[in-house]
Every structure is written in C-alpha cells, then in structure tokens.
Image (cartoon, rainbow, N blue to C red; front, side, top):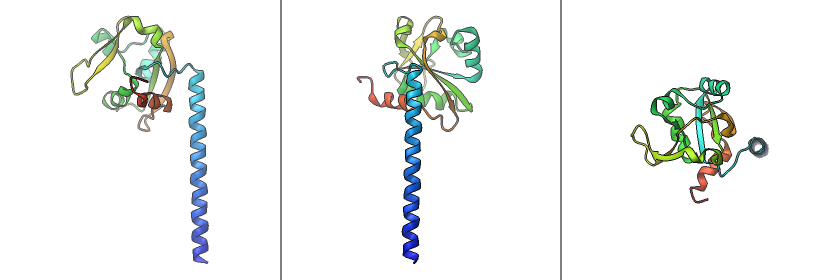
Amino acid sequence: MAKYEQSVTKFVKWILISFLVLISSIYAADNLLLNQSQGFNMKNDVYKVLTLDEWEIAETSGLIITELDQKDGFVHLSTASQLSATLALYFSQEDTIVLLQLDSSKIKNNLRYEESIPAGNRKGAFPHYYGDLNIDTISATWNLNRAAFEIPIEVILQGEQGPNA
C-alpha cells in the first residue's frame, strides 16, 4: 500500500507541475501577444528605464527626461543586453519601475553610441539621445515589479539574439 501511495503522490506532483508549466506558458504567450499589440518590435533595441515619478512627469510633460539626463545633457538609454546591469546598478532601491522600448526609426537622427558616462566598470557603447525625447517615440511600455525586475520575455529573447540577428 505504501508503494501505491508513493506512486500516486508522484503522479499528483507531476500533474501539478505540468499544470503550472502550462499556465506559465499561457501567461507568457498572453504577455507576448499583449506587448506585440502595443507596438513591441524585435528590431527596436533601445530602452529607457524610469521610476514611477519620472514616468508620471513624462506622461504629463510629453518628454522623457530625468534629472540625471538634464545634468549630463543627453538622455541615458540602454540596449536589451545592457538592461539587467542598468536595473541592478541604478534602480535597486525601487519597488516598481517603468520600462520603455523606443522606436529606433523615430530616434535614429539624435542617437549616439558612446562609452559609459560617467566612466566606471561598465564597458561598451551605450545609447545616448541628444535632444527632446518625446513620448510618441515609445513603441512599448511595461511596469516591472521588484521580483528581481522580471524583464519581459520578448526583451530577454532579443538580448539573446545578439547584435547580428
């Protein structure tokens, strides 16, 4: 009887895990479809991270800019592959942030890739936008909660493809 109960217990656990995997897949697919309908584009590889207060100001003013951006004279942006470090280094005290994907075709004329400013332990070229960055350049928006800042699956996939995709 004990062996039978162990088999039933294993089977029930397997069913529960399978159900959770299925639900997670459905949730991820729904999120992907929702964000694609909002304008997410795999070719747009430039992002802006804002606090909730900064996002509220952007929605009101129509411009995406932070105090740091004003001080430095350009808008700090990140590529998909730079997002994890940007979140960890500069937004670790925030419970919720807003992630904006920008439409590359709308910002390309004022976008420059430059070394990290200020110089530090981050290497590589970072996107900097020179000029007024309007909210109409946004192709997709996500509110990310502290749960290790769960980066949307479509952004993670984009980062995995690398620059030559």
